[in-house]
Image 1 (cartoon, rainbow, N blue to C red):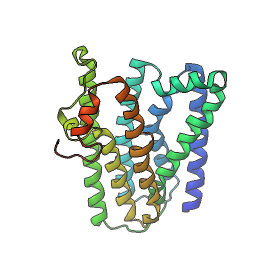
Image 2: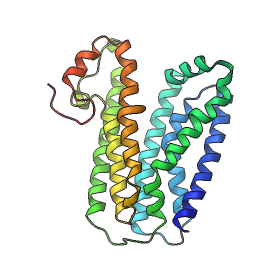
Image 3: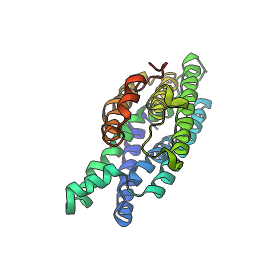
Amino acid sequence: MSVPATLLVCGLVVVVATFALWLISLWKRDASIADAFWGTGFIVVTIVAWRLQATISHRDWLIVVLIVIWGLRLSIHLLVRNLRHGEDRRYADMRAHQGARFWWISLFTVFWLQGAVLWFVSLPIQVALSTTLGSQWNAFDLLGILAYCVGLYFEVVGDWQLTKFKSNSANQGRVLDSGLWRYTRHPNYFGDFCIWWGVYAIACSTGAAWTIASPILMSWLLVKVSGVSLLESDIRARLPHYQDYMERTNAFIPGRPR
């Protein structure tokens, strides 16, 4: 199937899937399931784009496997976390602010907005899977796999260290500054950054270099919008020692503590 047709079908699938997820959130009264669906949503888009094609290359298989591993791991992690703590504070605050209107406003401001971002960020995947260009392996593939592996390591280990830290009641009110968190305040976000630039590098092998706006958008969101900036505005208000941690530890790119 052509690239435009693939993008259109995947877009429609995302609209329907996020609408169904919104209905479930109304039943459960928990908009946090939008976060848990984030990784799964990329799997859905990847599988749909993959199955729409008449021919499947080795690179296509690689992309599918990489996205499934990343997406399943992330969705399971967020689902378990949300089940343990209930609706995320961000959505609870939105619910309190919007009041009786939240049930329908959340469809646009949470679910369809996230679906639009998901579709746009996944453009390199959709384009790479719907083209037969670049059948031979090259340096972009190697670079992409390397970046992906680094990113997956930072995500998995960073989340594991944070979960272990929070499970100890003695750490209540303390700041995690050991392990990967000693070198960056957000190893999981840095890992996500590496993941998407790695996927983009692999997609470049198929002529999808023009989709560079997708990893750029993801990077901007991680650093300036829904990632570092949003999270730290909340943490600084709750943890008095966090400012000291900020002054000696890089926010995003890992580096030696100051």
